Image (tube, rainbow, N blue to C red; front, side):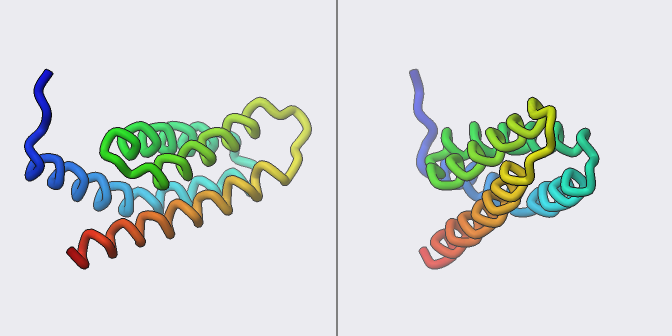
Length: 113
C-alpha cells in the first residue's frame, strides 16, 4: 500500500476545497427548488452531499464530512417522507449553511498557513 506524498495530498485538499466551495451555489439552488416543491432537487442534493461526505472524509475534513452526512440524511428523509413535514427541510437548509461555514473556516486555515 502506498501513501500520497504530503505535497500531493495538500494539492488534493486544495482542489477539494475550491471545487466544493464552487458547488455550494448548486447546493443552495437545489435547496431552494426543494423548498418550492421540486422533488428532483432532492436527488441533486443527495448526490452532491454524498460526494462531499466521502471525499471530505478521505481527505481529513471531518467536520465538512459530518455536515455533508447530515444534508444527505435529511434529503433521504424528505425523499422517503409521504407527508411533507417542514422539519427535515429546515434542518437540511441549516446544515447547508453550516457546511458553507465549515468550508470557509477550512479555507481560512489553509490561507493562514
